[in-house]
Image (cartoon, rainbow, N blue to C red):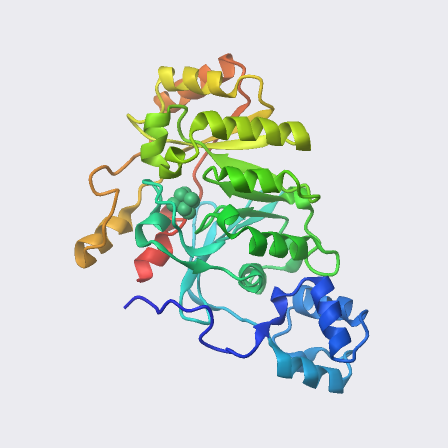
Length: 370
Ligand code: SF4
């Protein structure tokens, strides 16, 4: 049965202390009669050591610990399921939230960096036709504490120093949960917490122009990635329905403006789907669209969503994939597409999908457990 939709089933009267920025924590400490410098100590206990209770914060006076305990709690996710890819070490986790909803995170080990792919919402509103997360609809935003807890939970399995990069490419649209995602990012960036450089964190959007415009005014130099998938409005609207509201002309204009005001590069994600978006004509249209824009393009072959169809046949959940299950193109088609882009001067990298043997694409583990 689907879990209930609820912001907080447990600890209704208390908020997770991890949802407080350092400034908010300082103000809360002041209200409780504590010194503001204790916020740094508490950050270290929470994020560097990863304590599960206030009682473990041994350099915080007992009286203040009692007051903190009365006002706040510390969220801990339960790992419902995990899978590890034999060929590349990619590990995928399904977390049970305190209100019984579920989200996923993926740990991607590479030679010189280790990345966690994070979810930002329970479900997603945007209905991209190739995405497993879309098929179960939107439930709610994740709190900052829950976004942080995704990393804490993975870090309980891997050593602290092993995580170097974060990408918001899991379940949900991060720019649709802007404030909570940015709050979490500031804590990830804080030297008393995770100390992950802003440029090591990437927000990936399906193209929400208002969010892109907000992000360009942020002082933090977070990386931006846009899921493009086609340079043709008609095709893109079928793949990424928000394109009807924010069509390519407006989206690319917002991207150009973003690059101009931030002097940062944008990455465009382009999932290659056989017979949909990877012909020579598609490559030429993409090169024209991005001409003169400081950007790079990452192509990746489509990851087939096996479980969606299994679950749907049993539960009758509407699925945009039913009529058209997308599949990745042949190696030859990929090579020709990438070559055509390079010849046209596009900075393009083709990436091999990771964790294919464990269905590491976003939303697939969650669907399999519902
Ligand atoms: S690709 Fe992203 S924005 Fe689109 S449905 Fe999936 S999670 Fe939502």
